[in-house]
Length: 348
Image (cartoon, rainbow, N blue to C red; front, side, top):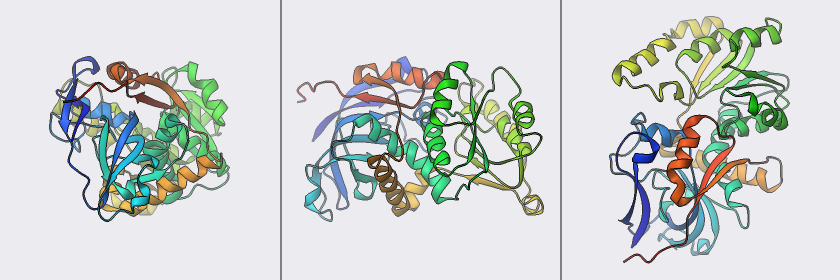
């Protein structure tokens, strides 16, 4: 069948990188379903792919995108036909910026009448947060936890999950306008890294103690800072490299980004009882699909019982994709950035 999709046709700024095209979509394979998409979400990895900085991205032209909400219209031969007609949230191994997409049944969860934006929050962002804070490890009552990019989608999810575990949450942001939002989520202390040395401010606030955990999607120079902030038994969780984004010197910028992180010697980790954990949810999805399945269903269940409250920060129509990308890259957004498809024109 033919379907419309936004293709990433070249690397660069948001307003010159995408093109709406008609593409061919094959029937779902034996373990897949086909979804008629009503809405799709953006993630910072999409920005990195657009900038040519995400090594997992497919070759151009490509349809990127990790999550959709829609209705199942076809099932593969190994999928129970009772899934037909169900409204779902689903992970996509790219392909999300399309009106129809195929994905493995393990990457799908039934959402019924749940708001599309709230459901989109649950996929990449809440699953990432849940995997890091509840599956990969657990956060205990009273532990001091630093959350970078705290007002973003994963940051929002982390704060809610961490507060449910009674952790002490230190939220890092680059804008004073987001402080009330973060406090509303339950953050115990908020620091604006653009107006101060966040390490000094945090150390003063915790009276020269040390933090227990850092959730860091920035990397680069912030890794060394977090490493110094973290005490024995502490964990630094790296799940992105946004400090590399926007730098124009190609491989030189990449090498400088790596240099800033320094070198970790394994014996030193043991001697100091400290840990560095790396998270790449695409690798988890590829190699451990049942883990992804469990995490997705767990966060959907938490949302249905109002134990978490997904936050949509901005909603756009599909013809505003470039504006949505620009907002996400600017760092000014909070919560989830989502798009809803406009009415379908005839596709020949």
